Length: 244
Image (cartoon, rainbow, N blue to C red; front, side, top):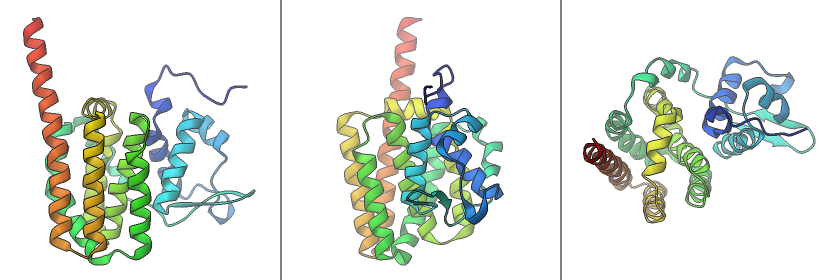
């Protein structure tokens, strides 16, 4: 029997979608004794998600500290996710990626500054591990998953529940298919390396407790991503005008 599901539905092989479903499972408390999650096979069947996507999602959740694994026993929920994350589903279908980038620029630099004030040594180690996974991801799905995990962790470390909920609402659109497509187009080996350097700068400032440095590094990172998305959109409009 094959572990992987048919690829007719793009969401079936999307680790960010798998992560969303597993987070919701944790949020609702629909778990076994001691917070044990269903097996990978059961999660695949329940959500119509491929085994690869489920494994990637669990890896990311573990790196964020939201689940933990016990050898031979299974996977268990750690700290609960933001209980208001499901509200984002109401706005995600109407959110344009560039509008999301504007909102991220308004919010995430301040989250980075707060993270610089409150991060522990363990937090910094986790962020560096996530950044390394994002920088070495071999496909767009994995890159989006680990990049999103890093930014979510920074938001959690900031320690402000109101701002974290706002971040969750904004971040939900990253799981929309059109966002993934535009982000994939905005990636090239050169840009991936650029984003990796920017992540390192953000984490270094947080580690140094440099609030203004963390704020500026996050703003530079998001501004670069927004500029790349705008260039791609302008080029697409030009190409369409040429062919019409």
